[in-house]
Length: 239
Image 1: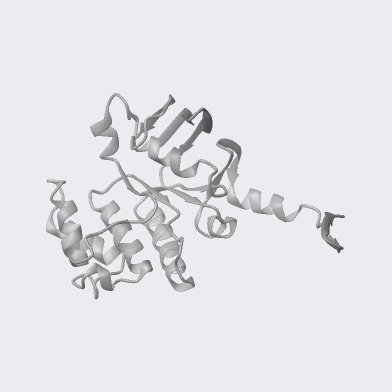
Image 2: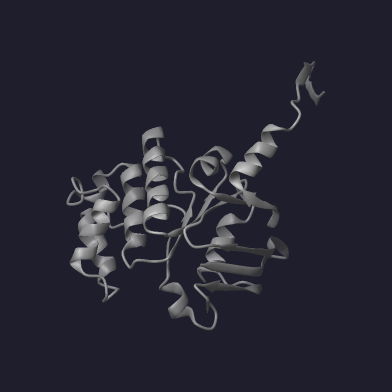
C-alpha cells in the first residue's frame, strides 16, 4: 500500500528526517513511534506532498507521488495533527462538503461512513458541540469517504479521555480487519501503539531506529534488566 524510500528533509541546515525508508502492507496497522520532535509529522507531510522532500521517493498503491500524484493521492485518507471542521455546520454537512469534491461518493456512502464511525445519533448536531473523541471519529469518517486503501493518522488519540481513546482504538482495529484498510498511525506512546498496531517503526532524531512486530518489541522491552534510581543530595544516578 505504501512504499517510502530514502526520504530526507533539512530545515535551516538541520536534518529533521534522515534517509527514512519503510513500507505498509494491505490490512496492516503500522505504528510510527517516537518522541515529539523526532520527525514523525514531517515524514507524514512529505508522504502526502504537503512538504517537499529534499530527496527520496514515495509510492502509494504502486503510484509514484511525484510523477502520478492524482492516482497516488486518491488511494489515501489522512488526518495530520488536529482535524479541522466548520464548527458552525453539522457533522453531516461537513462530510457533504468533502463528498462534493469526489464525484464518485454518493449519499449512500456518506450514510455508510456515519454508521462505521458511530455518529448516527449526533451527525446532525453542530460540530462545535462535539467532544474531542467525536471530532476524531468525524475526522476518520471524512478520511474514509472516498474509500481509500491507506489511512494516515497523526497522533489520533492525543488529548482524548480514556473513553475516546478506546473508541478510536476499536474503530481502527475494526476497519483494518473487516475492510482491509491499511493504517499508519503516529504516536509518542508505546502503550497506545501496543494496543492498536500490528507492527511498529521507531524514529528518533529523524532516523529509523528499529522496525518489527509490536509483540516482539514489547517482549524485548520487558526482558530488559530492571534499573533503580538512588537519590542522593541534589543528584540522581543509575545503579
